[in-house]
Length: 276
Ligand SMILES: Cc1cc2nc3c(=O)[nH]c(=O)nc-3n(C[C@H](O)[C@H](O)[C@H](O)COP(=O)(O)OP(=O)(O)OC[C@H]3O[C@@H](n4cnc5c(N)ncnc54)[C@H](O)[C@@H]3O)c2cc1C
Image (cartoon, rainbow, N blue to C red; front, side):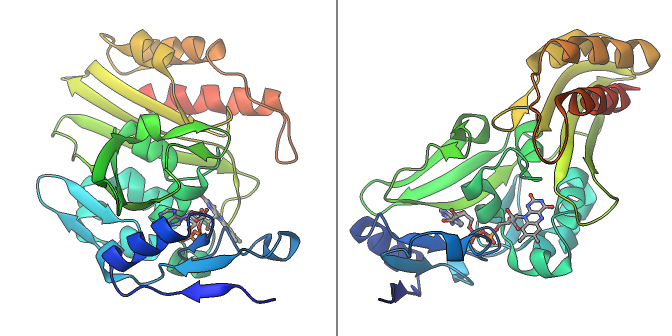
């Protein structure tokens, strides 16, 4: 038996197909889906979104909008991303190798919602909004922090597609960072990675958003660290406060990629570095 296959020419067509076939596999770049394709039951059908024009591209107005079907290669080379969204460019550059970046999309990283999805802490740190759409209810926006509800579980309804992510640019006195630690320097799945968005008055932290991946069942904001550093000047004291607050705020797991102890140590070093 071979699956049915639809490659819609517009978003409206794609949403109609999703409403009619909510159980079909939605395929963007396929870099997540194809990994275990031969071990999974064949889907009833495939809805192929690759290169769907309305899902592609990056635009910068007062916010940055990235279509769900935009590849990481397109993200990492976009002038506005390079200029004002450094952590997103950095994450995009470290998602697999060039071949994966040329095929893998933002919508796919968000759709899989793996705890090791490299762009996801960036979306949390920038407090990004996702735009979702369905044929029946039209478009809705949801903060990314509410989207992922558990291990690879999301709020996406069966008839919905991810359309775009929206990120507000940082103000001038904002330090933004992204850092990934894997088995080796390049082409590795993260053991721990994280992003920070730190608003400053002079050197003093007025507000911080800190997010980590691979330390829980989903990418998470670390509220304890955010509170501990607010009001402190960047430097050794803030770094130590961040490290101490993180210690009791995460419960990393042991798995094939790393041990809980190593993940905890690395996560502490990462957040300390964000504020030093
Ligand atoms: C060798 C290799 C290395 C990798 N390295 C990394 C890495 O270092 N870091 C990292 O984060 N990831 C990595 N990945 C995973 C993967 O490349 C990324 O998660 C990528 O962003 C997935 O995008 P895609 O378009 O290929 O998704 P797909 O495989 O097409 O889809 C993934 C999921 O998202 C859903 N989806 C996709 N688009 C939409 C949409 N518009 N609306 C609704 N649902 C949608 C699909 O239904 C599916 O469930 C790697 C994968 C491979 C094979």
